[in-house]
Amino acid sequence: MSKKRNAFHVARWGSTGIACTLAVAAMADDLAGSGKLLLTGGVTQLEGSAGGGLTPWAVIGGYGTSDQIGANVFYTNVRSQDYQLDSRGALIGLYDRVELSIAKQTFDTRDVGAALGLGQHFKFNQDIVGVKVKVAGDAVLEQSDWLPQIAVGTQFKHNDKGAVVRAVGAKDSSGVDFYVTATKLLLDQSLLLNGTLRATRANQLGILGFGGDKKNGYSVEPEISLAWLLRRDLAIGAEYRAKPNNLGIAKEDAFYDAFVAWAPNKHVSVTLAYADLGNIVIKDKQHAPYLSVQAGF
Amino acid sequence: MKIRLKMALALAMCCNALLPPAHADDDLVVFHAFGDKAGLARVMDDFMTNLLADPRIGRFFAKVDQTHLKAELTDQFCAILNGPCAYSGKPMDEVHSGLHITEANFNALVEDLQVAMDKNNVPFSAQNKLLARLAPMHRVVVED
Image 1 (spheres, rainbow over the protein chains, first blue to last red):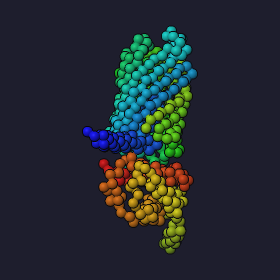
Image 2: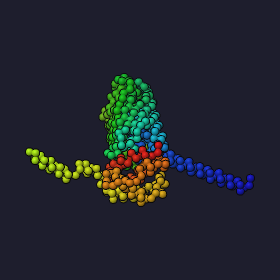
Image 3: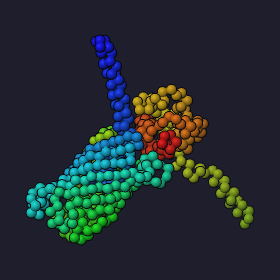
Image 4: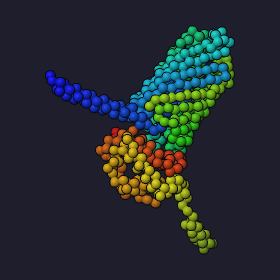
C-alpha cells in the first residue's frame, strides 16, 4: 500500500476512535451525571449505608437518578471520653434502585482495653457489606401524597475478635441485620422524616459480637431521623437509634445524635454531630463529637 | 323578637361580607414572598437565562419563543401560588410529550429555578413550597 493510503486509513480509524471515545465519554457523563438534587442522596451512616449518621434511610446513595449510577467514599470518626470509632467505606448506587456498600469499622478501646486486660488500644475490627433495594415511592418527587420512599436492606457483619466477644457473652462473631426504612421529604415544611425498623442480634452495632447470654435471638429496633433543610446545601437534624440488650455484663443504651450536614457541591459533604452513646461496656454516659466526610458523585 | 332576630342576622351577614375570607392571607403568603406577579416575572427572566445556559438541558429551550414562554411560566406559577392569574398554555403532558425527558433533566430544571429564586432573594421556605406544588408534574413531564 502507498504511504498516502496508509495515512488515509490511519486518519479514518483515528477519527472514528476519537468519535467513539467522545461518544462513550458523553454517555459516561450522562451515566455519571449526578442528576439528584443536592443532599438528596443522604450522607453515609456508621455501617456504610446511605442515610443519616446513625441510621440508614430509604434513599439510594450517590447522586445517580433512575438512568444513572453514583458512588461515594466516606470516613467517619467518633471519639467519646473513653473510646474511638473509625468507620470508612464506599458505596455504589445503581439507577436509584440498588445500593451496594462496604465498610470497615475500627473500635479502639484505648485505656479501657488495658483495664479489661486486653491491652492498651485494643481494637475490634468489623467488616460490613450492605445491600439496599428501593421498593416503592420517591422521597423527593412525591409531594402530593403520603407514600414515603421505602427500601429494604441487609448488613452482613463480621467481627475479627471472635474469642474476645465470646468472652463477654456474645454467641457469634458474625451476624446479619435486616431493615425496612421509609423516608419522606415534606417540601412544604422543608422537613425530612425517616423511620427504620431493624431486626438485629448485634451488640453495639456488632463491635461486641452478636447474640448473648441475656438474649440470643433477633430484636426489632426502631430508628428515627428528622432533618430540617435550612438551605439547598445545609441541613440540621437529630436521630435516635434503639439497641438490643443481649449481654449480661455490658448494658447497652440507645444512641442519639444532633447533626449538621453541609454539601458545598455534589462531590463533597461534611457532617458534624454530637452523639449520646450511653453505656459502652464498663464506661457509662459516653458522648462524642462525630465528624464524617463523604466524597463522590 | 322576630324583628330583632332578623336584624341580628342582617348585621351578622353584613359584617361577614366586610371581613376578608378566612384563609386568603395564608393562601397568598408564598405568592407575596415571591414579590407577587412582578417578582415572579423577574424570577422567570433569570430562570430562562439559566435554562438556556445549562449544558444539560439548554437544547430543550434553544428554539422556543422565550418571551412567550416566560409569560406563560409567570402565569402558571402565579396561578399555582393562588395569585390572580390564569394559565392559558397547553397542558404539561402535551408540551413535554416526545421530548424523552429524564429525571436528571427534570432535576436540572429545578436547580436552574432554585438559582433564579436565590438570585431574587426568595426565602428558602417559600422556594420549597413552590417546588412542592411543582413536583407532581414529574408524572407527566418525565418519560417512564
